[in-house]
Length: 276
Image 1: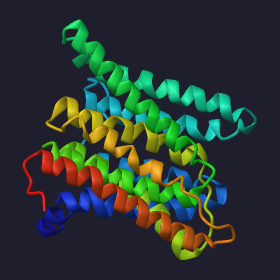
Image 2 (image 1 turned 180 degrees about the vertical axis):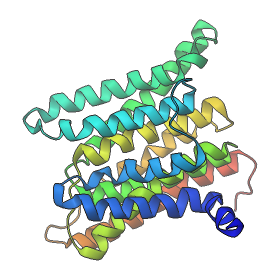
Image 3 (image 1 turned 90 degrees about the horizontal axis):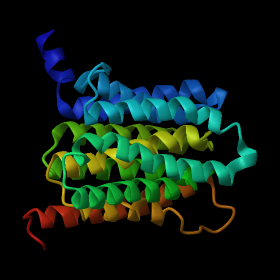
Image 4 (image 1 turned 120 degrees about the vertical axis):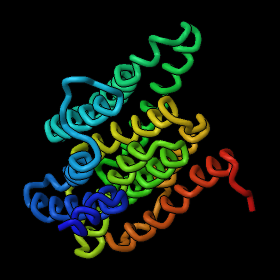
């Protein structure tokens, strides 16, 4: 029993294997209901259960991030039902992402001088809004969205660790591994899974908050945030028509994972690593 507890309490298991398994099971069970995108929040919540908790009586920044992810996962399936207003909904999501960022970090911003608070507030909101705009466009292309979530989550977790925040690192890795399970299921079955904002909205909110939290609460250099935006951007490059879903997923997984090494390597070097 002691060995099992030690195994379960290992950070790699809590932020790697557990969210992957939880998300993979969720995809298999929910795809028939066209809700396989909930794999993101399922994997994330599995990690939260072990490394944090769901007690929201005292809303710290981390608790606000968890709560925002849960709310995003709750309303996302409803947003998928209003496809006739795609452009308007996208504008609302982008604006709401910026507002959520200000709400999450308000307890820190209000303690800073006005000019510094405004600078940080604009920067944090801008990052969340740009990320939301990039990722929301991928809602209709699961072959691009899955690999993007995988790479963005892993890079976010790695940057949080480099910023000396183990908890935020685990939460970021959990998002990445959940998206990895979603991507692997699609790759092995050769099926184009349901995606929509059920997948992209929780991904947007969580990754749009975890990296800024590592900057505000820990030691992540600010340069890490704009560099993370490269990951969803490279998922836009065109592929020849007629490629199978497996080929599409494979190509986008490769290019987004390569792009994910850029922010990690630069931040590592910025923090004192050796540049080869």
